Amino acid sequence: MRLIFNPMVDYSQRGLDGVFSAIADPTRRAILRRLARKPATITEIARPFAVSLNAVSKHVKVLERAGLIRREVMGRRHVCRLQPTSLKRATAWLDECTEFWQTRFDALESYVAGQMQAKKSTGGSRARNR
Image (cartoon, rainbow, N blue to C red; front, side, top):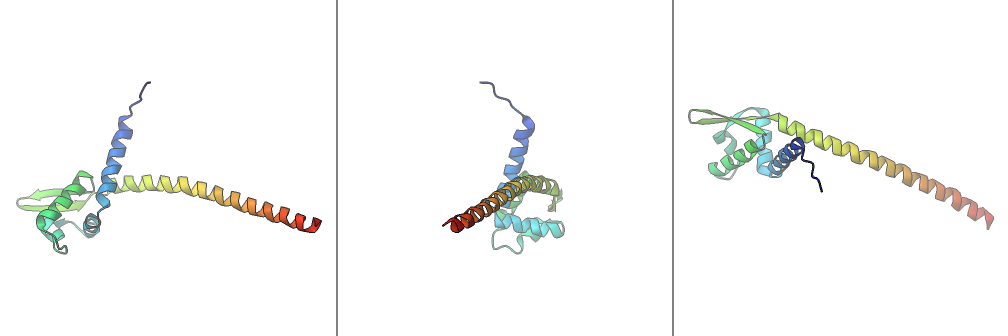
C-alpha cells in the first residue's frame, strides 16, 4: 500500500483545526470581537471578564497559536491585533462546505418535488379508474 503525503493538505488541516478549536470557546470569540474594533493590551482585553489576567493571557496564547491574533511586545505592554488571514481561510472552507451541501439540498428538493408530482399524477389516475 502506497501512501501519498501532501504537506499542503496536512498544513491546511492543522491550521483549520487550530482556528476552529480556538473559536470554539466563547471567551476567545469575545476577545476576537473586541480586537475587531481596535487593538488592545492584555489588561484592556481582560477588563470585562470575571477571570484572572493569567487566564486571559492563556486565551490570547491559544488565539496566537491559531494565527488569529498577533501580539506586539512594547516594553511591558503586550498589544494584540486581529490577524484576519486565518479567519478568511476558515470562512473559505465553510463557504465550500455550504456550496457543497446547498447543491445537494437543491437536488434533494427537486427529487422530492418530482416524486410528489408523480404520486399526485398516479394517485389521480387510480382514483378515476375505480
